[in-house]
Image (tube, rainbow, N blue to C red; front, side, top):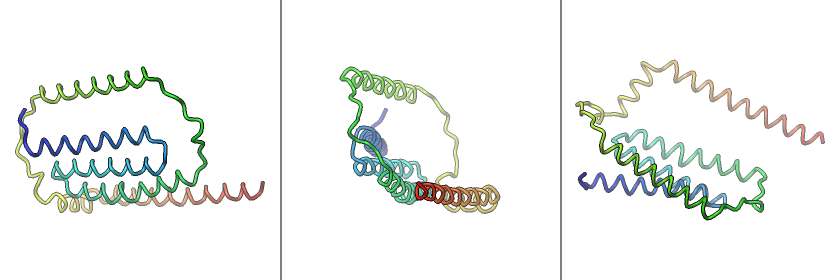
Length: 172
């Protein structure tokens, strides 16, 4: 194993993603949870940049770090939740979970570095955004349009369900 700049960047970004995920699970305030989720999403976008997938990284930042996080924040803040009855976790449970995560990380680390994959030359890094656009609007145009129709139907359905709940609440 050699320590290169790419390896150190990967380890730093991966550490930020893992810490953000752990904080998301352990924090109690909603706004703090969303901020840690944003850190995780941005770190994942950084991993995409390391893999030379700049388009996917930009989409990750725009859609997940922006839109999805704001939607989750509004959804959580508009619903009723009871923070007073949080279950207490024991010290031994935390230690066992930590040891399990550490063991899993060690197994993945050893499995990756002992796995030999032959390298095949590819043109993956050349104009990947243009290649995605050409494939999306030529070869995959029907699934692309069906996905947009499906999202539109889901949006209309959620509006109808929200109106029905409002009418039921007004009737009572």
